[in-house]
Length: 457
Image (tube, rainbow, N blue to C red):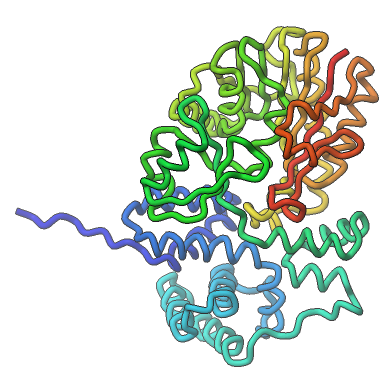
């Protein structure tokens, strides 16, 4: 009888290098690559899973500052380095500077071992070792002088792109800019939304405690909890598998209330993604009425279908469509349309730090035309007196207030509606004097969401 094949689980460092290399090579998000890695290696120990997440997200969160240090420690320009050499230097430097419990000798040894396993030349292995030894022995090089170049200093210290820092300095001033940058580098809370079709926050708290997890109520969302301690991987917990909760930032939970969804209504959602807000709409409707959710991406719709099935949301019909073009829905037929618009996502940098180096300033101009086209198509679907809800997760006025102003200029049959009564009382503080809804990691530890409610006259 032959022996069963033994599969060796790779180390967290090896997987981190693989994920970062694939993200650079294929342009895929590190979040998707991390999720795929966890599926491929279900036996990866819990400690290694946490270490892998820390390495990948930590390197992406601090990449700009790491590169500043490495550019001063290495004789070779970063742009001319072999991609794997640069990735190994970033991984090593991150461990040396941010992870106190990892011994320097282990960092150097593992970096060399990984370099050899990936077929790098002896000279490249030696180069990696020399740079990391220099960093370990002498510490990081001095940061830029804030007095001579405030924007560059903020960019490097907080690891944000220089173009974004300059934009925010012009809009917010130095103090608020620094606060926003610092908030983006804090690890966000583990916020979850309770499935009120199946349970309530108080009962779920008790259930989570039985499963070894501690949770406390959210500050603003009445259906939100924050997980403060876990004994098991959360997505393997029975309560999650039964569809009693999902991960969703408190800011994302709040914007759905602005739809004022109720049983028996006819509602359309444009840009449903993986179905988080779709499920919330179905809950508020009590699974009664008509709800169609659209998205352009087939894979997201497949994930949404699975999530909604687990959630017990039987109401939504999912449809693949390009929402910038005429939609296969009857005009003037819907009570509400929610447009969760594609955007630069600068309000969720703390959860997706890779955006810092993936997004370029020129990219910002690509979003408003698409956002405006989606609003135009959505507006045609509404009945008179219907509600159009526009949502983004960005901080930039061109994608937020600017898009709303452009839409209203061409559509005098719509007007802006503040709608404080639709929000939980504690969340009404996020309505601006102009009537927009806005949250920020710096203000209340929520992701940065923008929303506007438009009423069809």
